[in-house]
Length: 179
Image (cartoon, rainbow, N blue to C red):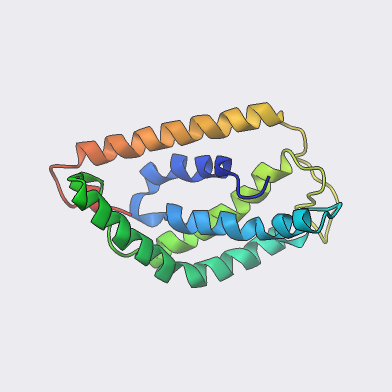
C-alpha cells in the first residue's frame, strides 16, 4: 500500500538521538516521493509497482530532489506547528522555525534508502541493486507481520523518547528547540 505510515518508525527512532541533524519532515516528504511510482502503478493496474524509484540509484536521485525542495515546505510546516503548540500552551513541544540543511539532507537520504530496505523485505518486485543485479537479498528475511510490528514498536519508542527529551528540556529553552 503506498504512503504507509509504518515507514515513519525508522525516522522516529532516529530523531531523539539526532535532534537538529535530522528532519522527520524531509524524511516524510521522501517517503511520499518514493511511493509516487507504486501509486501510479496501482492506478494503471500494473504488474510491477516498484520499478526504478525503488533502486539505490533511484532512491539517491529522489533524495536529491527532496533535499532541494524540502526546506521551504518544512519551514512552512514548522512555523504552523509552532503556532499550534503555542496556542495550546505546549511551548515545550516547539521546534525551531527553520530546518537546517544537514537535517534536510539526512532526512531525505535516510528516508529514501530506508524505504528501499523496508520495502525490499516484503515486495517481490523490488530489485534494489538494479541495473547491476536483479537480486533482492532482503526479500522474506522478516515476515510482513514482523516487519509491521517492528515499525510500530519503533514509532512508539521514538515518540516516547522524543517526548521525554522535550519534557526534560522544557525548563531550558535551548534544549527543547532542536529540530
